[in-house]
Image 1 (cartoon, rainbow, N blue to C red):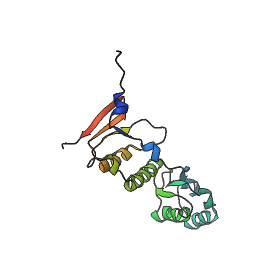
Image 2: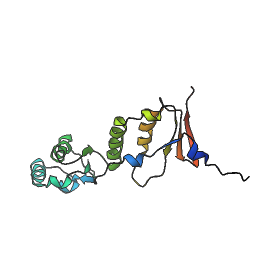
Image 3: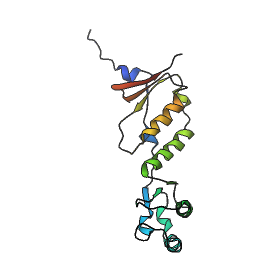
Image 4: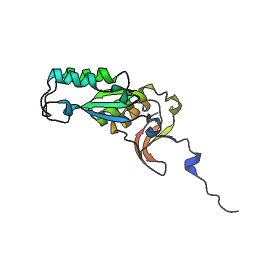
Length: 169
């Protein structure tokens, strides 16, 4: 009788959680206001408000938008909020900051809404490789949510994991 090769990983209770699978579709946009500044340095309120009124905000429909200023200028908070108020009716999400902050906020909200009770008392692998821009903080949000309920948390792939947490139960 030949020894049968058994795939222990396939037969285990390991659950792989891939953050890439919950990545929401939609264009990511970095909206930089520097071009609306006088000499990319000074915000002139009347000209700025004119630019805001004339801009086609519907172009951001179903997008995720990060509003920033890449110029080394002092921008009043109301300027960012004025743009956010105009984009908000069209965009899926608007933040004031960079694209990494945008992805962080998206994942924080997504993970907050997930029902992860199916991971209770199970060993969980957090898949590490991704083609999407998953911020490192997304893993921290996920760990915070599942650590109280799961048996263990590992990081990587089923064939090669790094242990992160093991329940003391």
